[in-house]
Image (cartoon, rainbow, N blue to C red; front, top):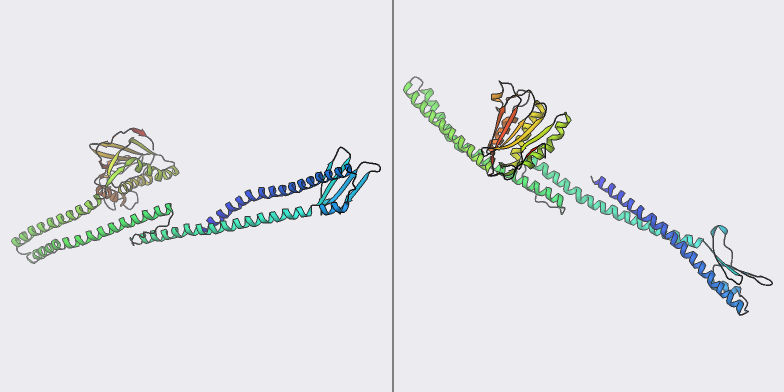
Length: 425
């Protein structure tokens, strides 16, 4: 990336220098030539006036005086008369490097002033060299700024990549690094928030594991002791019955403890629940899954009620919808339709395709772990149902052939102004 930034910045600088330097060089060339021409024209007119004045005063024209007054000039004077007067002053420059301006009066006086063009060319060359030097300096400054800017951009990106890799490895400490660039700071803030959430999740998982080990140890120990008593008193039916009833009580207590732990874990998940705008969430799913369906020549459609809001977590609901869309893409056929509606104070998102559906023997067990009828892992629907339950909703198979799944979510009061549409937003 650093090399790309350097090359692009240098290219822009070169284009800018060429667009400015070439017209500037042409303008300087013309300006210097025009100034030299105007100077010769002014000298020719001035000399013509002097010659006219000398003729009126009947004074002779002194070539030496003209040579001192107009150094480095080649002067030609022609005046009518009997005989005609012709005067030349100075050395004539080579024809290839000669610049000449003349002037003529009504009295028959003609004056021509010439100079060597070499000096003008030297001046033009000096200005062009100055322009080239300034262009080179501009390019050097551009390269320096590009190097500084590329370092400023690439080093934070490398830092952020390292932070992301650290998060992936389980180190969930927020970095709190900021770089003075709004976009990069926003990414850093998102990573820090993700690190905080991951840290909270890990803390809750550790807390759950600690509570589970502590609260399950006592019931399991009592249940084990009861079973040992049953084994030891296998020849005494009364003791077996008594200990068996006690073991049942211990098992029920164990079940209650497990339910309590799961309820506590779910309450932690519900604490993160929020109002989710389903329009934005479903539009994002269309953006993510639309290309995959188009590649296989299938269509993804959205219909039903718009403007719905549900209680849950956007991540959990998105994961459930993604799982259903992935199953429809891999195992279904035809058009996949997402239908949204609000029924009985619940929000319903139905995902249906036009494929062969789910076999009758598999339909009752489709949400069981490791149960798959198409060579999959058998975990997707299981995890999706768990995520739906964690958000206070439920995931159901409403029609096996063709397959249609419905996600039921909690509604946020009145949905307000809703409208029915067909097709993606």
